[in-house]
Image: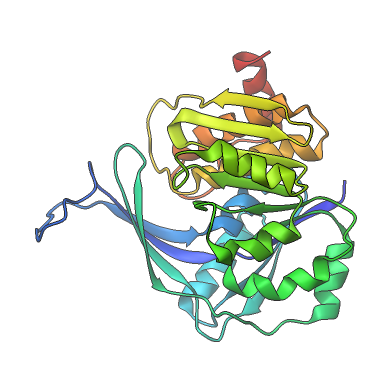
Length: 296
């Protein structure tokens, strides 16, 4: 199988866990457990896919700084192949406040550059050698879109909390033929999914956190998938990327759409049970076993 090329999405995150999100008034919180490490949507997808045994290459930008070196060392140690560009603004960093239900307030304390230096011929070669591309909605990834024209294999993008109108997302929507998004800012998500299908998208998947996910196929078929309950929420940061990776694991293996959703639900459940990104010490073989137990 040709590898999946993941474009963009590496940060260094500081995660603070609280019983509930802070009320909007001045206060002192005396107990605030935290951990820190690699974050963002590209790293989360790449790590989960690698754990599932899906050949993957992460092409992303980090700063020439301590945080960037930590990210590269962490992902390399976990077996994620990567090609890392240098961001002149330094490594993007986030502070995320999480509550016991998995809700999040995310603060970008530094941001990646709108443009980074890269070799177009090298990236074009990586694209040609890939059987699927995941185009993340990172600002510098706008530069890569022209190299995806006439690409013969599926291009996925993850719009995250798209509201159905934000013009920032449109170049990524135009470039992709498979769409993943969440309903966080879309209380009426079905019309937006229909609009994306009418624009020629082959598949649209909308996730709803602990509620589950909805899928719309190119021929107008709707599928609903409930979330797989987790015994406990350890860290919900990156669980959506684990869902995405589980879905793509099935998609790359030509599984039916229903089974892809079920793989995604299982990986999303594993993701919230795992501290940090990914699905812990689990694999594609364990995913198949879990599918047999839950859905066969």
